[in-house]
Length: 234
Ligand code: DX5
Ligand code: ZN
Image (cartoon, rainbow, N blue to C red):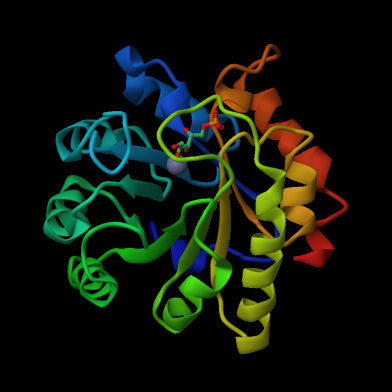
């Protein structure tokens, strides 16, 4: 059963971002990520409005759904998630993360995603403080801290986001919640260490796994190896 809530929050999980894969063979790339040790699959949806880039939408997700039994961890970098919750759910997205900075009212988006049958995540851009997500923590399954400005793969990791990760982790712990704390952008075998040490357990990685010189499986394995000693902190 593809349910994000069934996944542990106390060990490092890897969510390969297909943005760095070969779109011409997307279904095969997703299947390959699963065989290489991915825990979930990260799908970056961009509307050219919330971010200055355009990727793909529900029809593409529908066409690749059969390629994997893993949770589709769908990251909506779009201005109006409210009207797209149902189309993404119908296409086979299991989990929808939207941005707190989007144009739609947060409570309504959360409700729409639940009604559509998906788990819910909220993402924060680098300039948004940790406290902005605190009022919503009891109602969501995942918090995504961006460690780059959203829009493009292959950017440099922003270490200044680490205090935010730590602050959100503290609050999740204080309330005793089962929430995936995800980090996304510029994460490789080096930057994953502070990311996990500060409490993020769900690691998005695009370039560092799909373009790893030793291959995808090795890229994923190195993220686990780099953080093996940190699982006990999570
Ligand atoms: C950026 C996307 C990321 C991106 C990560 O806006 O949300 O998921 O694909 O790619 P890397 O790991 O290359 O920074
Ligand atoms: Zn993403």
